[in-house]
Length: 298
Length: 265
Image 1 (tube, rainbow over the protein chains, first blue to last red):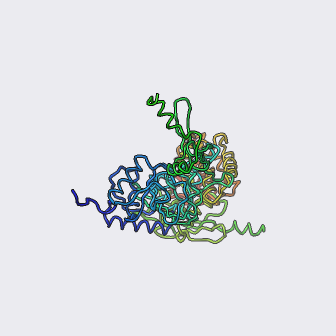
Image 2: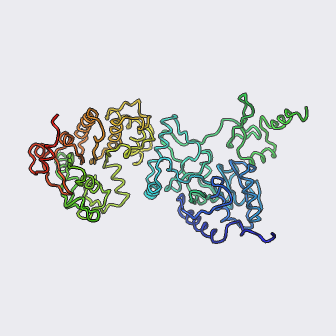
Image 3: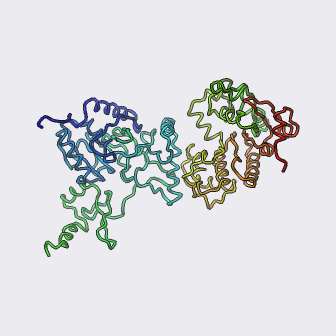
């Protein structure tokens, strides 16, 4: 079987045109959820079928693709999507944020500042920010149409009433271009400020829910809050154990069953490039120590 | 200034002119006209299927009339035809100047969010953005409807039927509406709870100078709350007048039947 079995980037050209039309509309109306005829992809829902379709529609032969999953370049999801496009589109892939022109992401925005020639494609499980408060789709659409967003504050109110502060830590609702309230996909709220006035184009694809939305470059994105409970990005109060970074988003990793834990950058590319540049954290040697316990060196 | 206020009260708040609604061949509401003045409570009574609820939906703009129209005097003093209001305006009216108390509190409340947020929702919808003030107002309203403020963070699904109904009333009144529609507000409650609720409603209506259109099949409710009664049968208003006049000295045979069918206590 020598003839290519797939069109460039897997999807046929008509499908890509359909998705591009949806993307153009989404860019024209920042934050508005554009319905599109989402296709079945060779992966299960929840693994990024929406993001993959958006990436397939915008990918060109000269593009350099980076795929991250929870900030990491080397999880199963990230690797398979990267391989998928390497195989079906033959595009160059990278793990370096700077070199990529298209970055497909699940749950994180890279730490490195994005630039104008990049497109960030988010995988979105549930695009509707009002969903868990208002189950009727007809009603939520009407609320978006009339910009009735009081209900969004009800959610934040509930948080404060229960926990004393806004406890929503991810999928924190934002208002785009002073009009549409948008779910930024389950990114931690730490990443919300990065969406504001971002030079890169941000596209959101929800495959199961069949919606595409977008934030055009340099668009105002405001996180919702109360006057007396302002929005605050959350971060563990520790430096990265591997690279010592003080301002990156951290993952908590449990290291033993005695309460031991370490905090490391969730953005692996950021962490590795810092380590390569000579930065060190308190536990930089930890992985080697564990290997020693395995008994190879006695 | 006093004259101005008097003038305000002299003009009707809501005017219905020959309202009718038919569903296919069935005329649910025929040629209903009346005017409602600020601070006035009107009860619409009649048996099931007499068109009470249809009339309420027509008056509150939830249903488009087949004929006739309803005009409402907005807060700026200008009377507007409800049919000409845009959807955004109508919905704004709904959550500011109007209230709607459903028979089933689950329809009017968000059962899964706390009582405080239920009351605060309308405030947040009109742009209140200060948690402390919203909460203060909410707890103030809970006190006014006799709900223990210690339960402000409990969801209404943990409330009893009577408490839910009182919470629904608080949620509707928090934006200080001028007109409240009530659809069988005491339906499904036991007698002692009903009495307490009616008592509460009566004092709130007087205190806030509310205009109320209340649909009920319970003549005792009509007698306790309303100033005027409209008796409906087969989609028509067959008798209307002051409450005590209609209930003590009914003119129409049907009204006489209604009144006489109340069991003596």
